[in-house]
Amino acid sequence: MGEHLTESLRPWLQKPASERIAHLQAPRWIGTQAARDAIDLLQAGLDRAPALRTRGVMLIGPYANGKSMIAERFAIMDRRRADAARNPRRVVLVQTREGSGLVNFYAGILAALEAPQIKARDTSAKADQLDRLLRQLKPRVMIFDEFHNCLRGRRRDIEAIFAVLRRFGRDYDLSPALVGELSIFDHVMLTAEMASRFQLAPVPRWSYDEAYLSLLDSLEAALPLAQASGLSDAPTAKLIFELSDGLIGETVAIVTTAAIAAVRSGAERISRECLRDLGYIPLSRRRQSLAREVLA
Image (cartoon, rainbow, N blue to C red; front, side, top):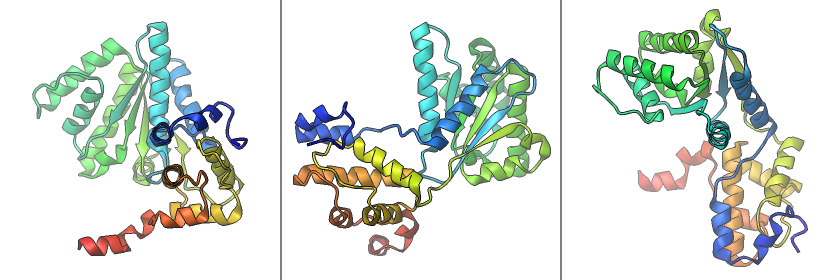
């Protein structure tokens, strides 16, 4: 029993159902090739020599496909290294605020730096405050998660934000990492000058292939279920792929939900019947789902 699990996970089979369910519900890092490649590009931004014209990274892909987890993983890695060596942290993770304009953009960075917000609508005051903090803290990489949030506005506001990113590189030797949807790529590629400043780290939608089957095998080995589920067997794998729309976030959500149901029912394995019983509606079909019609 449990031969399908990683060795470190097998003791979990002896734990109460409530503890196993809590383990299943906890966020988990999935080191896919795209994720490892993105981490390597971000790390290169930390390890590079000082430069007046720094290069950044675009971490681009569809929603629910693991981009934010990659960004958070990299920031956590830096924090652990810095705390262990008692050094300053070199990575800043910014949750980009909705709306274009420098006031919102600066406010998001100041919040990430845990700085007090002064003169809420005063752009110059926020810029001065941020300049002082960057001179003091000297970060090397600044990650802007959901960067597409600040691209929904007037063209001149968007150009001002990109001008600030260029200034950060010139004045503070700071490499930006822009995380989000395809619109980021489109805006950066509008000019050769901006395009030359960023490397692409794609996080594409999955195809139904050997790589996806390997992903399912890795997930199954990390689920504390007593019986093997055979998630990579063709009928089950195809069903999970169809329900997930090829998105890793959806794949993990489906498998996790099914595993929790298997623990609660005592089945201790994920079957096709278990997956169908979830009533899971793919993201691409939710707008046309019966659940939406009931709400209308």
